View 1 (cartoon, one colour):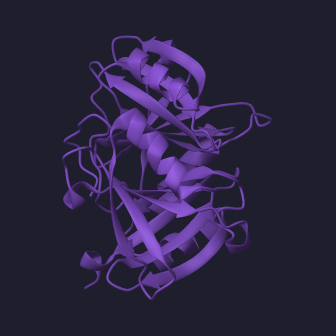
View 2 (cartoon, one colour):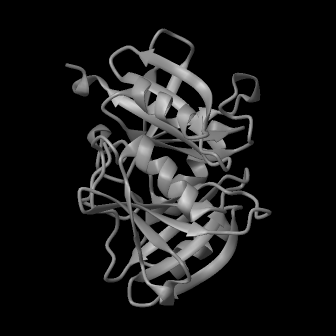
View 3 (cartoon, helix red, strand yellow):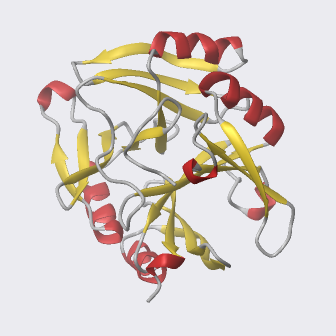
Amino acid sequence: MLTTRYVPGSPNWADLATPDIEGAKTFYGGVLGWDHVPAGPEFGGYGMFQLNGKTVAGVMQLPAETVPLSWTLYFQTADATATSTAVKDNGGTVVNEPMDVEDLGRMTLCADPAGAGFATWQPGTNTGLEATDTPGTLCWAELYTPDVDAAVRFYGSVFGWETTTMPMPGGGGDYVMVHPAGKGPDGMFAGVVANRPDAGLGATGPNWLLYFGTADCDAAVAASDRLGGTTVQEPTDIEGVGRFAVLTDPYGARLAVMQGVSQDT
């Protein structure tokens, strides 16, 4: 499960690139209940999405022609420079070399060998998201990739991730889940899935899909539809897991919403 007890290799931040901050505030406020708090002019318009006063994501405005306008998942590192070298040594790409963000931390934008984008965060005064794994917060992630084994080797070499493999609910093969080194299955935070453009979820090519918790999946989808989003996958039940749907916001950024079984009453 995702937790704010961050260790090297665990997800510790997520942010949205959008061409319209005001529109994003309206959409995510309606779908996930978020408020927006600007970080200040010194951060170039960057801001925080918050829920009940706790930061659950970041958001930045980029020109509409920028590709991709999407969600980015960050993974914790104790040494951004060393991790950047490991990315390159294992066939990935460093899009932006490690850079300091005031005294908040040190970030790097990267892509894995298949082209899926991600980032790393070396904490300074900002140690990461303040809430996860509850309704309205980041609760899971999936990597869509053409070669599951190659992806597992890459991220294992860069971050030390370990894996647990379980049968897919209802059949259909195995589901590979990852967790930080030494944390075991209780530390699982993401699945690695063979890219299937025919199924729709992988239609954008290799990518990280972020899941956000919701107390009511169908209500979240209805809010998305009302606020200009698009439903990529209608609400679907997964036995023993919950009910999820895949959406794009009005500007094309893809996300998933998940109503966990523990929330059903």
